[in-house]
Length: 239
Image 1 (spheres, one colour):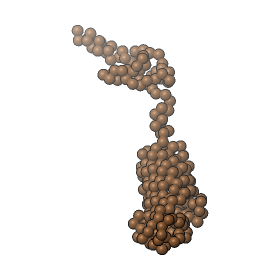
Image 2 (tube, one colour; image 1 turned 180 degrees about the vertical axis):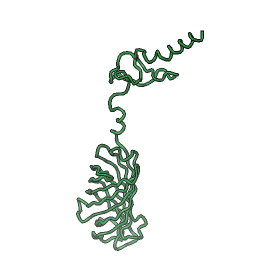
Image 3 (cartoon, rainbow, N blue to C red; image 1 turned 90 degrees about the vertical axis):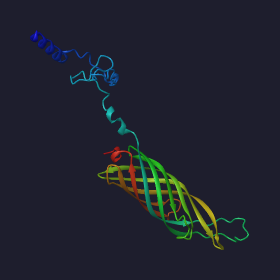
Image 4 (spheres, rainbow, N blue to C red; image 1 turned 135 degrees about the horizontal axis):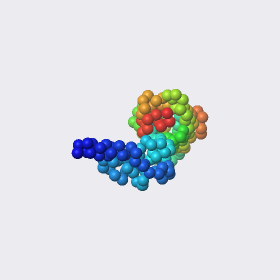
């Protein structure tokens, strides 16, 4: 009796190794969702099994595991910079206290910037908000606000990303009037800038970026900036 029981147990244990795994599966018909979450999780839909027998492995399409890396990732940057610009004249307005406008003149501002970018396959696009001298005390030209959309290309070189970008937007300056310093007028002008960009990966998620750019509409304008970036994908998914 004991011998017969041992033989029966041996048959049960050995039988799966010689069981017919069924016909091989085509890659385009593979579905790895298990239909039996019980003690046999390797059983899948249809007649295919997830095992190591060559020609009978049931798996997803070739390279499907890498599909998420092909999508875009997002980067958020917070930076500070130095900007040299030409303040435009204040247009004449119908105010009895105001006799004339203010002539154009150069200004240097310390600014802070917030950027949000979406990056995919060496191309990126995003939005930027840059603010400076909001108190109007440090510089004679009052508040500075610049917003715009940017787009660029970059390439990986070791721990660096090198690239260039263009920004198209608008700039607003809150400027005082010569004859009445207490009176200020908002002046808004278009902005187009070309920039060079160098980004160093400090960790899989954090970068330090340096930007240097110049104005297209007024070539006497330039700016430089340093920014810390936070990324949603390790090394941008490109390393």
